[in-house]
Structures are given as C-alpha cells and as structure tokens.
Image (cartoon, rainbow, N blue to C red; front, side, top):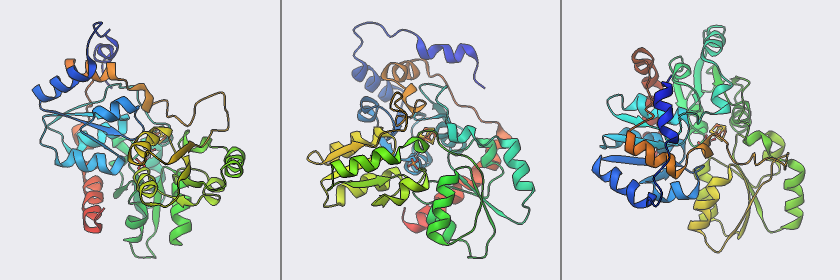
Length: 328
Ligand code: 13P
Ligand code: SF4
C-alpha cells in the first residue's frame, strides 16, 4: 500500500496558467517516460497519451517499451500488470485510488481457497485481478484473447475461470466449455438497462447494438456484435453501418468518433439514470492535473511484492506468448 505522503502529491494544486499539454509533453521527453492510456480515460488524456489501447494492448506496450518511466493512465491492476512485467522500471498511475470493482470482487485469499478446492483444474484469470490472484493463476487472459486462450486447451481440460461471471458465461456459451466460474462482476458493465437499450433500438432501427462481454446475458442476447473494447472499436471502423448503440464504458466513444467522424455513436444508458454508471468512476479519477503532478513528482508509484511478482509474471508472459502466436 502506498504511503499517505505519496498519495498526497496527487492533489497538489497545479500552478495557475500552467499549459498542461505543453508541460506534460516536456516532462515526458525529459524523463524518458511513456504515457499509456486505456480507452476508458477522458478524451484529453487519450489525446496526449503515447499509446491508447485496451487491457491487452497496454500490457503488450508495457512489455516492450524502452522508457524509464511508465505512466499508466488506467486503473490499479493495469499499473500492477506493467510493474510485474517491468519490475526495474518506475510505474506510475495518476490516481492511486483508481481501483476496479471487478478486481475487488475477487479477494486473493478467497480465490486461493477456491483454487485449492479444484486441485485438478487449470486456472485462467482475467487480467482485471490483483497481482496476488495472478500469482495463483496458470494463464491470464483479457477480453480480446479469452476465447482463443480457452480454446488453446484440449476440450476436456477442467478449467476455473475468474473473476468475471459474465465473461465466463459468455466464453462457455461460445466455446461449449463448462468452466467453473468465480462469481465476480464489473459494476459498470452490469449496469446497462435492457429496457432502455430496446427503446433505443426502436428509436434508431438502423443502429447496431455493440456490447462488451462483461455485460449480462440479456444484453448480449439483443446485441448485434459482442467484443472487447478494441474489437468494438475495430468493428465500428470496418462495418458499413452508420449508427451504433455502444454498451461499454462510454470513454471509448472518443476514439470511435475520431476514427469515424460521420458515424453516430449512442451510449447505452445504465439502469439508474441518476448516476453515470456507464462511466467507470475509478477510471475517471485520473485527470490531466493528476497526470501533470504524477510526472512532476514521479508519484504515486506502483509497488509489487518481489515474491508475488515472480509468480505473477509467469501467467502474464504465457498470455503474451499465446497472443503473439495467435497474431493478437
Ligand atoms: P478490455 O480493455 O479488455 O476491453 O476490458 C475492459 C475493462 O473493463 C477494462 O477495465
Ligand atoms: Fe473495473 Fe469495470 Fe472499471 Fe473496467 S470498467 S476498471 S472492469 S470497474
């Protein structure tokens, strides 16, 4: 856990009249830092990043960068994954409070106990987990490669899949497997309203519903296309359709709109319209001001216990190797 002093740097007031874009750019060059951003970050952070991608792409970039400092504009587990892959580099996350409800739904001691109750099972974990969960995992997956990695095991392989029950159910349904699932979920992707999506479909009859597999089954069933964040983005670029109802965190619409300025993107609404649950509150904790402070003070830094790091790197590297073989 980071010290309070370290966390305190995040909110140091940025001097008035600071040109954030210019200063962030200057500091990243001076310090040989790379800024990696997830598609669920705000548009300004995506625009200044050296690279924007989904969870798999961020891990792939972290694994190959020659920068001295990695600033991971995403959530804690993404910074941890980068640190596990690059233990000798400084890995920073603009706001250390940027957690993940899905990773939180899988406490490491409980998961280790679950694994011990299924001794003859291969353990496949979604990247949205803590380092300690990865340390008891055989192979990590992301939503981009989960299907292919599950299918790379012989059909009779007994598999534990965690922590996302929706992604696990979806992979079971498309592969015919019967993986044992951990009962976790993401609060953002579980919040989409079937009723409101159906209303939007009536309002925009030409629109395709495109959905992330962390969503619940009824939403997946009314969808025209299901895929990871990167797959959804690619689909909007290659599809002949002009309108899309987007059932994932709405940050990705920034890049969708940039890539296809003439197409219409409609964010799918959450159940509770009084809250903006289709925005991940954790992802949105990162701001340009915190990114500026993060580069200036080189804090807050991600640390991973050495023993945990040595165990957790193996299933991540296995994922990267399989993904490379599959051309992902
Ligand atoms: P991907 O980046 O794999 O699409 O996962 C979505 C997500 O919820 C990340 O936190
Ligand atoms: Fe976690 Fe969901 Fe936020 Fe992704 S969108 S970081 S899975 S809470």
